[in-house]
Length: 109
Image (cartoon, rainbow, N blue to C red):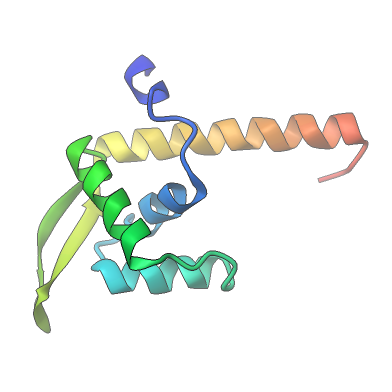
């Protein structure tokens, strides 16, 4: 767990990239999935995406699993077990933040 904490907090872009990779996707698929999940609020630029993918690969939070059958230039990525542990940790951290904020502000959630 301490190893996971060194990656937290995640940027919003990295959080959504990991979340999108619960199923195998290529770069463009990740961009579209993140836009869909956030109803267009988060739009990943190619530089942001590929920088984050490189970092996530280096830290073994995701793996390269092959190529898209329809387009060999598109690489497919998927979250690893370590990435899932990190994502779960981040979800719990964010839930705690929202719960504390709502309680202190007198807002029901």
